[in-house]
Image (tube, rainbow, N blue to C red; front, side, top):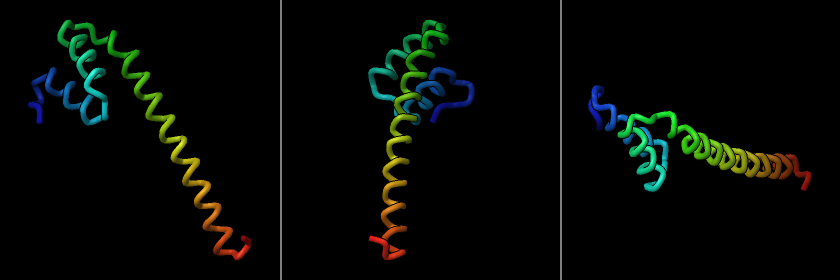
Length: 77
């Protein structure tokens, strides 16, 4: 784990914890090392959007299962 004063270590660890792939992590780290933190934002926002899409898809799947469970429990299927 990165020390609280190790900015590059903190950024790297956060990217890994967020599940960023190696390519995204490398690009972001280059921006960070060059002091161009703002250039990271499009990559992070794109990844965040992809994660939200995954969550929405999985929530829809859970909703479908919940409906099926409900119908079975009520013996309406």
